[in-house]
Image (cartoon, rainbow, N blue to C red; front, side, top):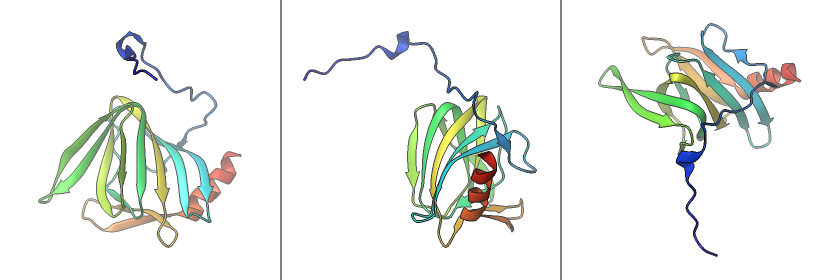
Length: 155
């Protein structure tokens, strides 16, 4: 087999066809939407699409267990807390794939055209992520069962 280069510059920009998705807004967070793709209780896993409107930024949170991230469309920006200040950590273009083992405090933002991100997250003791306020106080815990209920409402 020979290696063949593919001229990706000649291809038009692609967008995911999300016309069959009824995006659900994260309650209380304008410009942040989700669509649950699946919940596997045995593996303690949730897969979902996360959509961020242009410039929309989610509150600080930490995925408790291992998380895989694939930027499907747009630009996904991540922020981290360093020395008491939030700073831009990564600018992730469409096609970016990353993994972390969990317990990583961060915030996320949609780029100039927004972003759609595929998240594959594992729970620890049923907890998918924890959300914090500006003072670093825990304000919400998102559980595997929360996503199971959301999936049931989508069907």
